[in-house]
Image (cartoon, rainbow, N blue to C red; front, top):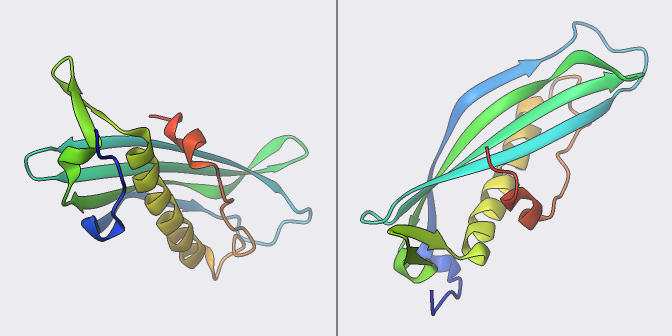
Amino acid sequence: MDNNEIVPSKIHLNNIRWEKENTFLVSEKLEKKPTYDINIAHNMMHNLEKEVVKIRLFLDVSAVIDEKTINQGGSYEVDFFFKIEDLKDHYQINNEKPLFSGVFVCTLLGISYSTLRGMVFTLWKDTFLSSIILPVIAVPDLLKSKK
């Protein structure tokens, strides 16, 4: 990890796969505008020899009106597959396991979450959820939210 400079041209997002896609919608417009509880978590897997990293994002969205959860929102799991040309520069071996640079993991999480925001926006565009845009978040907070 001596050279942990992030070189964007060496990060390739090669595939995105929906693992779980459950959108819940009420059949008619709600009388009162709900607030939305949004929970985001992640996990990370890797293949050091192939220089591949997979980020899975978990997204749960629930509508709340007067402290009651309404069956509107969704539950999603999306995998983001990265090929990293200089992966060896972003970790060190500690107790026979790789320990990745926080900046490197935050970079992949930021790319993944930003992409997820656009995907969900597109998914919800013709529904009662169309006015909801996933918030901009502090990526280091997402780093702490493992699942």
